[in-house]
Length: 580
Image (cartoon, rainbow, N blue to C red; front, side, top):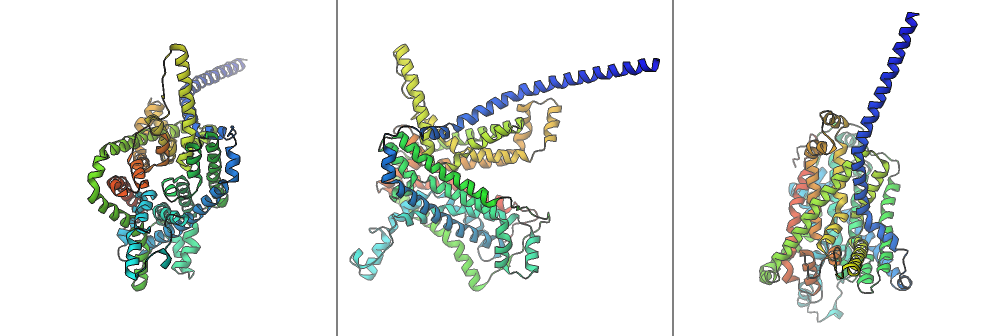
């Protein structure tokens, strides 16, 4: 009997302890939920705010365009489709061939100048396509020095005596973009080749495959995801380009959006063109995912040592030098030399045109966008990590696709809601107080900065997300056990660990902001010039010489990140000393 009473008492005590434990756990869970709800709400709000331009485009697509859409489909829309498709095809193939071939040669071969070519092949990425287009137009047009020299040499009197390719054409635009965008493919392809295991290459050589057979049968398939991502970035940049296609009079969607909105005055028509262009981008992303399917591209071994390299001599060494030197010479060296010669002769005109003020404007916008994009990207990535919500993860990734959307499209999506907000506030203030507030958001530096952040958020968010994944939850648990909350854990644990990749992302945002043209042209305040808009305006008026110092300043802003990227790839492989 006493044993039964004791057992009953023990059971009641155990139940009470379990209830107390459940109560404590519930209180702790509610405490965590209360803290995490702030992150969830903040993350959801930021996702909604950053997604506003894209949502606006989708809503405006179904608006009344007053017959503009029917006019476009009957006249210029087929031309937009054909020109945009051919531009993407040409630039994609050109950058693929140059980027992959040069990446393989500098990674796997030994030849004179290899150590220089490793980083120099990235230099054209610092040269905006529209600058290269301006330079080559000056050189190759009928009144330029090249055709003038040909006429003098062969005693030709006019164009009826000879044929020369037209630089201001679709083919010219493809060439200009290929020369400046191939580094995206080269960068990712070389990183993929450097990180490949030596074992798979050795197995290929053991089975009797030579260098080319090993490249096509082993190295290239393993590097396919990186190469596809590089080509996708190239195509997105090609879709975003406005300066080159406008200067060459190529009727792509980006040029059409600018024309329909600013010249025809149809916001709905521009939004519908933007929606079609956005569909192009989404198709690119979907095609890449579909093509990859469920295939695996993981390494089958953890053995890493210096990759075997092939010594080249004679004609093969000369061909490799030529293969690597031509893209650098045509995409960077020649334009830089021409701009430098112009700058030496016309620097006074640039200084008199307030070059310093335009440079400060560019630095202010780009630096502000870099800092804000870094903070927002880190906030989103950490908020998603804390919540573990699939919905928030999907929303944050949707908010971060701005890099895949052309600047002209984002500008439409920003100006419409900002303009509606300004009009609503102005109407209320007029009716209530008889005061006019004017433009509070649209046509301000805030609108331009917001546009930069939306467009380049993918860079900072991607870097933060990738870095946070590498930090184990046990490290977070230790910090929380020591009494640190989510914000303190982020500040004292995560930020120091991801500082390197975060700063690299901010640097890339800064460089891209210095080069950004279409969004700045549309969103900037009246009489506000950056280096990019200043150079574009002068070059459009056939005055590139007067703007050449500003053009060189844009290029210089991108050179240091290029060198740092190359050094980072060189040191990325375990056991690889980077020697040539």
